[in-house]
Length: 342
Image (cartoon, rainbow, N blue to C red; front, side, top):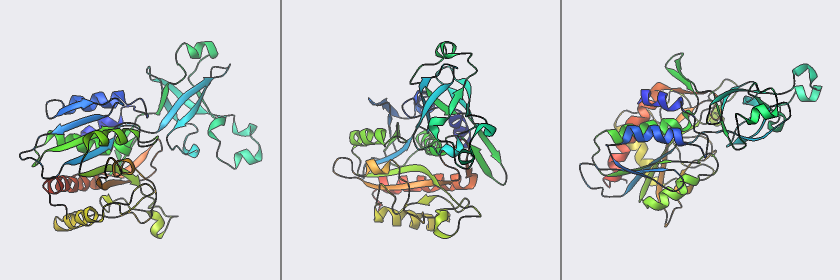
């Protein structure tokens, strides 16, 4: 699973341009399930188990990542851009990026610090004051290499470091994709449907259409969620902690999760010696926000990996959390599809 995760993190898939990620996933699941691509570009994969499901289960994660989109080019050949998804302007300046289908190397810049006013030096540079430098000599040269609407991703990265940690780009939500690929390639007890969806970072769009198509009774959303376990953050504001296992949420800003499924997750974790934690703040959201209100309603649970510096060029997770999450999710898939959801 970790090898698959590495390969996924080295791909670019900014919302609305998930093709490279989709192609890779198809190459790994083809022959292990029946799959198709819906009109928005999400993958819907039906995996046959040893038995027919008692309850129709959907497991879902999103393929897209936050990034940028080219909106203009100035006379100097510098690219103007806007954020795609929730990107904090404070983590953008000076970063290396890949631009467009040609994966041109670029650097995000702004005017030199000694040319800034005192107020400008004390605040984050707003996104509309930044540009991407691709080394073009002028506007005409830049437009011969890029086009308006080209997506821009952070420089790919995946690297184990420290004491069992992993740092990488787009761990949100290539973690979920990697786990689903492994489940599809394994032998499952019951039939299960999987969706690898598009455009989560810009409004849960792929999940909304894919879940309507699947029409499940129960859904498990696999995600990454903010861990603020840092020295200057205390108590419940840490949200969750690296090393304490997967995160099972009771509520966030888009979903109040099914209480029976929530309790079942913690019960299974305890029975099998799997560390597990919940979020200590009602914050964030994910594809569950669209899935749980699809059609007549879907009982939904979210299981997430705690992740520092989410939506930045370098996210950080703990390997043991990912392995424990995969172990718990496999148990949940078996029990929920088998009707043992209470």
